Length: 139
Image (cartoon, rainbow, N blue to C red; front, top):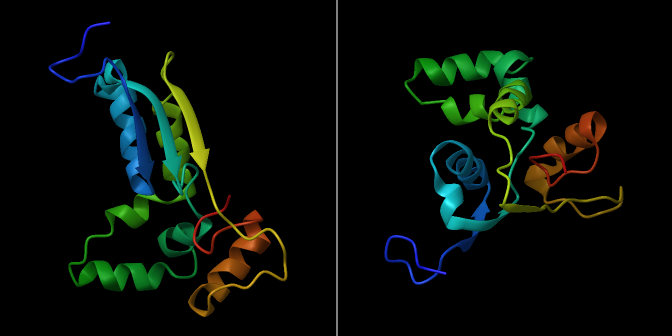
C-alpha cells in the first residue's frame, strides 16, 4: 500500500497519555486523522471525567474555583474534566470504524493498597463515589 503524505507507512499506531487521549479521539473523529491511524491506545485518559472536577465545578469546592478564576487562572481543563462535560464529549466523539481502540488504566483495587499521602483524600473520595481509581480519575 502507498504511503500517505510522504510518511513511510500507510497508517500508524498512536499512543496518547491523559488529556492527549481525548485530543487524539477528537482528531480521529472530527479532523480526518483516522485515515492515518490504524490504532489508538490511550494511557490514563479520563474518558468519563472525574468526580473530583465535579466537586470544583458545581460542588462544595465551587468557591475555590471561582476565586482562582477571579485571579485570572484559566480553568478550562478543570471544566473539561467534569463528568457532564465528558458525557457530552463522548456523545460527539464516536469511535471511527476501521480504527482499533484500547485503553490502559491504573488504579488501586484493594482497600489496603498503599496510596501516596498527597492523594489519600482524593483517592478515598473517589473510592466512595466511583470505585477503584488512581487517586485522580476513576477506572
